[in-house]
Image (cartoon, rainbow, N blue to C red):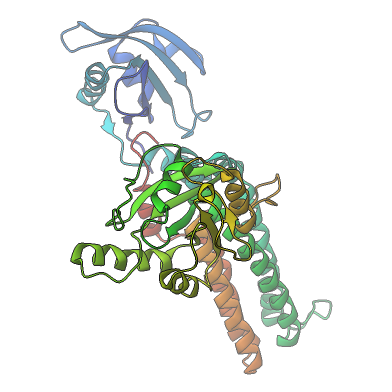
Length: 447
């Protein structure tokens, strides 16, 4: 049982209007009251804010503060909590924190406030992870996904799946333990099979939607490729509306990949401006080209830039062949110099003047098939959650294999139970301790 009292700075490190120091534990109110000059915090009502000063060991004022008191169980951790709002200077915030540590309050571990909320049952594991997803959200859609998970929608989806599996397990158990009850449905392999097949179909639908959720949350790895001097860096700068990449008329200027992120229609693109691909004897340029080819292989979206004012070159044809199986957008740059190139589905634009750049942005949203994401945002977006769903599917496919092999129903049940437990790892209803330690170690101190 957790009984010690912890503290941490919950606001970002640096100079600001205010800083907030969070204190939680059985002695949180008593400890802060020891160093607070103002109202007696032991006697104030919960969810009230009080003006005063934090005093040093020499009885001199450290800072003028506002203190919020939140009594258990009506707090984030369900413990007694105090939030001290100090002036937002680095030095003064550190002094208040050191004063708390000097009277026996312990520094919180990363994610320990959220972990205590999880241990107390206030939130489950999926909701806990949603806290950090909300903090790290890169765009509006990612924020909506995190808020949805924080409200428990992801947990409800997973719990509904677990309940269905549990229903199958329960009937199997009854038939094994109490075969004499005639009114119980005999859960033979032939009855289990269609139930499991329908469950796998439902999982496939969720996994299909989860790819959208992952792209909305993490962003889309997007490689901008083309032969040297075709305008890749100019296109990157145009999309970013800033001079991120060096642009010259000299072929081979970009010697390495240049990375940046941009939001388009609520979708984050993790852009990679690659070195132009061509035959070269320059060792440094050759390394850059090798990295470009690697970026193409790893990209979820490829923007292939061609010179609209020139005919297809050998390098262009190589790149068209290299990317034909990728999710790809063809861009004809240098529209302002005239048309010589004609290809199906090519988007003509000028990276220099930004003419028709909006057509590219619309195509990006369309090709990623994220324009129909809906308003409920009930998508699985966590890589860990997706992995657990895929593990569950494998276990249930093993169930079908066992049925086909004619194994007894009690043997088949083992994989069904393992699938039920695997789903439980998403919400934390079934969890190895090392999983919990690993997840919360990735949180920031104040959460």
